Length: 128
Image (tube, rainbow, N blue to C red):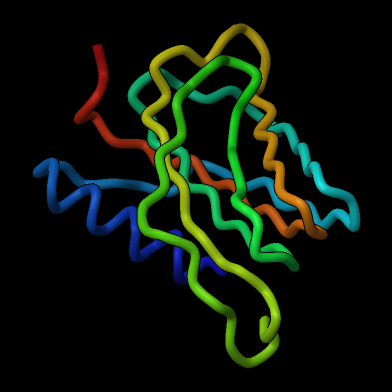
């Protein structure tokens, strides 16, 4: 899944004219309809969080976090191949506008079992 995050972050960096560097990751696999995972360290306003989701239904997925950052779908869901046959896969991203005092907790919701991989990337493009 890291390749998806690297590709998206590269596109963001090119579009914004800034370079991006990897900060940390948080991954969780849940057999329920909601997956939540906190980052081990704080996120900084100006970072970009890239979330890769894979879930086992055709329902829509949503992503939120504990600081209220807004997550946008990078593209519509796509059908998985190889080891992800039968899964929907989708990328979401959000600029960290408010990180809050504690490490962010990213939550994903869908109607099938979820795999959620969240990665913040540091870029000066959105820094206040």
